[in-house]
Image 1 (cartoon, one colour):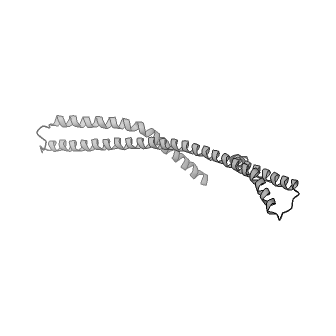
Image 2 (cartoon, one colour):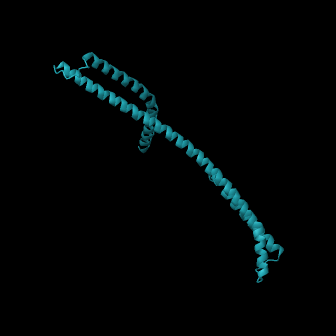
Length: 182
């Protein structure tokens, strides 16, 4: 109940102030001018002027308060949205890096496969090597590709712990939710 009042305090306060002031305005007008509904147009005009002077000012004040409150709410939402966009941008950068590193690893593995097939061809007696290539040169290329893969894997692992933590957290929540059903 307190949470409801706290969240809607401005609404409750505005309605309360409006009801108190309008009750006071109507009551004081009818008390001072001996009440009853008049058939005279000038009495209704005086009543309208009285209400616009009391309730009109109050309504304008409440409108300004509501306008200020809505600007404050929009400012908070904008700050929240900005932080969410920044987090999303950072996550997308990480995903791009992971994809690029995975593609580089895959490319190096493909290059190793091609080089190994050349070695197999030379071992089987089929010399289909380019005149500038020899077995030692191919081994050096394979070693170079393996060093690249090791380097890419180290870089990739620097991004993955965060992702594994997020996956583990969501998995734990799902497991916890499944346990509650039993």
